[in-house]
Length: 123
Image (cartoon, rainbow, N blue to C red; front, side, top):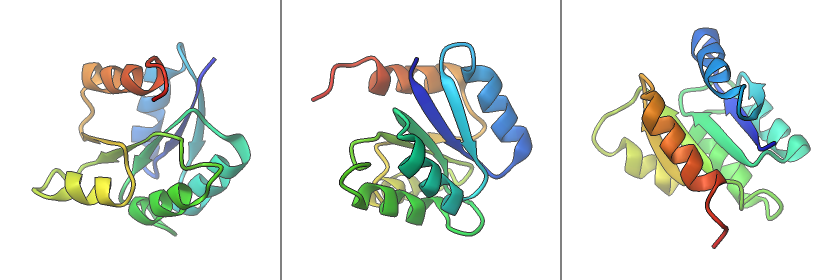
């Protein structure tokens, strides 16, 4: 079973994402960017859903640090953000995010992106 790390500080949002995913994936969670980095290093998930507005270390910096590690840089990171402002997707991609989903989450769009990264052959 593929493992997804959900890095989200808002309990309601985190619980919603876990409920959406738990039937098809093993779901790991972290509540801040520092914990997200530690979980990525320790648990080596197949994909990370990264909120960008996080305490301790924000999602942009957490993504940069994960992507800077040779053993982790291959893990796809999809940014989750309520910051649907012009330029936010580009900023997320510049920090290393492979994709971007704005909140509130569109369930179909979320699963389409998960399928893109988890079901496609590498390369």
